Amino acid sequence: MTPTRVLIVDDHAILRMGLASLLASKSEIEVAGDASDGPSGIRKALKLKPDVVIMDLMMPGMDGIEATKELLAKAPESKILILTTFGTSNGINDALEAGAMGAVMKNCDFSELADAIRAVASGKRYVAADVERILSADPPVAALSPRQTEILQSIVRGLSNPEIAKQLGISVDMVKEHVESLFQKIGAANRTEAVAIAFRKHLLKM
Image 1: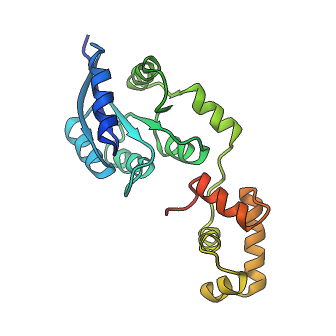
Image 2 (image 1 turned 90 degrees about the horizontal axis):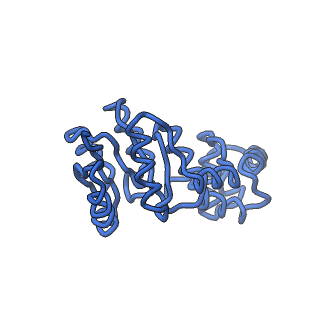
Image 3 (image 1 turned 90 degrees about the vertical axis):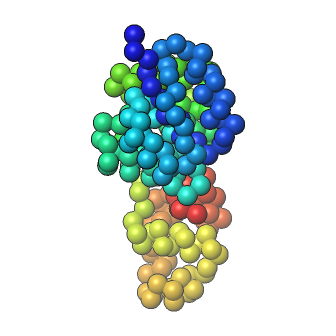
């Protein structure tokens, strides 16, 4: 049987080496290569054409979500499995919506990772039970509008309503309306909660 070829994309060298060593113990899986960031992962995926790309969700610079989008735009046939330590729904959901076929936690059993690789390689969606629980317990926030994103960025920076109004060139009353709409959308009762939710759910590119 032809082994399933995988490419590991993660910014932690120790994880890449450890994962490659574990996968090498499976005769039906072959590590075609590895990459330390999104851009190099895309380049290697296009060159090596692995059966499955194991993609870290959160990497500096280009994260796994953007890398997934860009790779699929260039090679729509790519099959991507997200690997994450983050227990928040938004990043995971964004990656799945971007086209990733599966997601597992980094602390999963090796047997589950192998099952996920086999499933994704065969064209099936695989979302681990731990990930499903996160998605159910912490529903993702709907995409923010450009104006809501500006308002949230300003709140995170600690700006008051008058300061936001001056920065955006709108009235203070209009800012208040936007803030109320934003809070309702993300489920925040006040500015402190809004900032906490922004970081927890990765609503902004920091």
